[in-house]
Image (cartoon, rainbow, N blue to C red; front, side, top):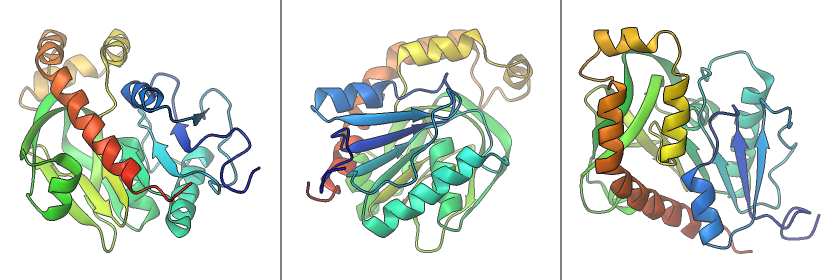
Length: 247
C-alpha cells in the first residue's frame, strides 16, 4: 500500500451487497471523472476490506436485505463507515447504504407503514446543507424501492428531504450523506429489478397505489425522469467528491 492510496491505486471504495444492486450510474460517473475505484460485492463472495485507510471516498450501495439483518457483511460495512468518519473520508449511502450509515452513527431503522417503489417526488427543506447537496430546486423526482427507512436519525445528523411516504429521505452528518432513494439508478437496473421483483410486488401495487407504481407507470417515469435524476446524481456525487481529503 502506498502512502496515499490502496495498492490498487483506487481513490474510492464501493461496497455492494447483492449482485443485482450494482453501482450503475455511480460507476459511470466515476469512470467519466477518471476516478479509479474498487468494488467489493458481498453476495459474490468478495469480503469487504479490513480498513478504508488510503481511500478518499466510500460509497455504500443498496440491496433487498434489511439493515437490521444479522449478516456479518452488514456489520463490517457499518464498521468501515465509522472508520471512514474517524479518518475524515466522506461516505455516501444509497438506500440500504443510507440505512447502514444511520445505524453506524447511532440512528434507528424500521419498517415503514407502506413501501415506496417507483418514481416519486421528494422535497428538500431548503436548509444550507440541503441546497448544497441537492441544488436550489426544492423538488426532485427520484427512484425508490424500499420498505424500511431510517426513522430516527443519528445524534448530530440533519434531515434534508422528505416524501409523502417517508419522512426522512436524506440526512447529512459531517461530510457524509445518507439517502433513502436510488440516485445511482439506470435503465438496466430498473429492467433487472422488474424482471424479478419478488412475489409480494403485485400485492404491493394493489394495496399501495399512492406509493407503489406498476411496471407500465415505472417505465413511463423512467422516460420522463431519468435525465433529471442523473443530473441530480452528478451534482450529489460532485458535492461528495469536493469533500474528499487531498490525495
